[in-house]
Length: 251
Image (spheres, rainbow, N blue to C red):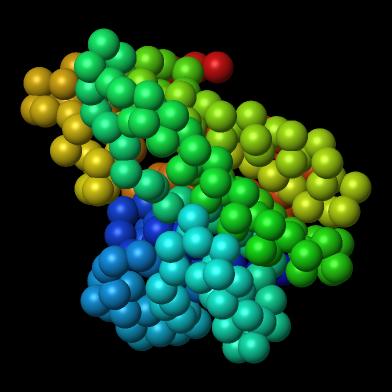
């Protein structure tokens, strides 16, 4: 039996794409999964059914991760159902503008940075007491290669996610003595996600040509890295950033 069996993971923004793939992967490894969603109730419930039919355990809970009241209610529900949250996978993506800096307003750039860090702050604050009490926890944040590799018109997302990565490093330093690891997974371009439309066919071909492994990432590629960080085997890695990009960018 996997040593992580029976743990509880909260995956934010889990109704589709990387979040859904992560929920499936964790459930396959014996982790009970809380599928957080904002709008996509039907997709979330379908995912719960899929996981249960495969022998896993899952529950779907609606919450805007920027709302402390909604998040507190989510955590209370999970505590009543399963006793608490051992693993946080913060994947929820708040809206952002796709445009050049010259065209962008401060509300679009500053608002995205504020949304990104606010959501991470709220959800982390909510799960941290339980992890601290048991002196074991896994905090995993989904970043982006755009934090390191700028791409045209993606300044809002790239800047916000760079701030998230640094936020995670500070948490790793502070929370290590409590047995809590904090890591970031930074995908490059990923197919079959809510933002995969950002690349047109020509851009996609160029990205594939620039990738040593010869293809773009799939959601499951990212999910498997997240699952490693979530598990017992990750006993001595914290404050790290894992690039999941097929070698497109090496750092």
